[in-house]
Image 1 (spheres, rainbow, N blue to C red):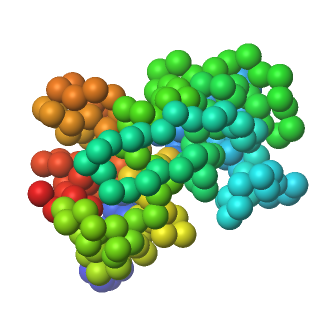
Image 2 (cartoon, rainbow, N blue to C red; image 1 turned 180 degrees about the vertical axis):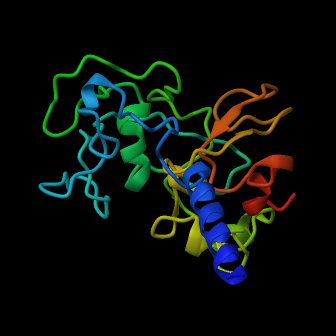
Amino acid sequence: MRFLTFLSVVIILLFVFYLDDSSGDIKFSHHDFSGASWSNGEICIVCHTPHHANQEVSDSPLWNHQVTNAVFELYSSSTSDAVPGQPNGKSKLCLSCHDGTVAFENHSGVTSGTRFMNSGNVGTSLANDHPISFIYNSALANADGELYDPSTAPSGLGGTIAEDFLDNGSLECSSCHDVHISRNTQGCVGCHNVHGSGGVATNTLSLRVSNDGSGLCKTCHDK
């Protein structure tokens, strides 16, 4: 009898924990658009569809949103050994809202939307953002001297940087961000800001690893 009572309590606690734990759930996150008039009351439909997916970007996850055609100004620095290219892979999907050129409601075949991103708008200049769409491999780590080897360095998520963070060997928006989690932590403060000029505190959202103490930065950067 005591065992059954104990088991019942455990089941109830697990059920409550499941309801309250949104850390790995897009519901109630800043990418939950179910309350918007242009989402048909659905969470997933803005980005994903089970049928007739947009295949403009290879290896895209059943994509349902119009893809950006913008040409981006790229990050460039004399101290960087990485060579960024025009955004591709999952980065291009992210920028299909975050560059401000494609309307939120341009999904499911709609191309005439009028609601564009303001807050969180990266724009078409990536010159002052962390570089993306470049190959991050052992050769780059060796050439740079202050990057961990992605093939062997741990990601903090159970595998290596290459296994858990990279998109077909390339560093993309999805290397740092996962839109399906709602983590909200304070970004690097002081001399660096990955989404703008230095010296400004940033509020970074949906990070794949907490950036407390610059933890996410130090996953790849050997400082």
